[in-house]
View 1: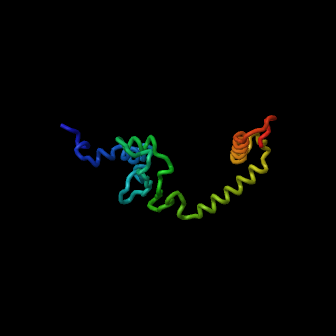
View 2: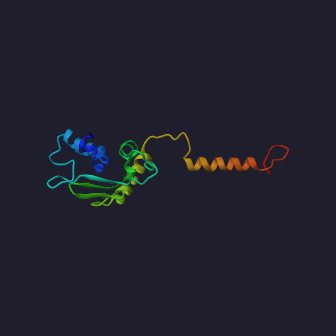
View 3: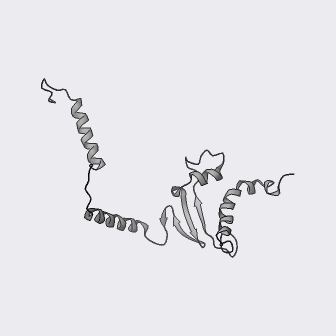
Length: 147
């Protein structure tokens, strides 16, 4: 006779996420407040896009999600039933302004740091390489100078 949890395909399909979420919450002592979407519990969850090349086609989506999933696939984050992140950006603050502010601070910090650049920036190096390649493709005179 088959175990009862194998008689329900939905239960079998979602066994790994259930263990990761429900059992994980219990393992860290939070099972009374979170770990499942239920009346009286915090609604802490992620909405994950599984229709991405890393996960399709998958013969074991639960395992592949754990093994190959990453933050790029998180579409939304809910904490205590409140949506905090949607499509990669915070809902309750100006995420783009934060990124712009960080970019400015990082630029100033790098500009004032005692850093000695050994290699050129990639764009400069690319232009130099292209220029050398173009000049080597040009015909040369008897003394080897490009014409």
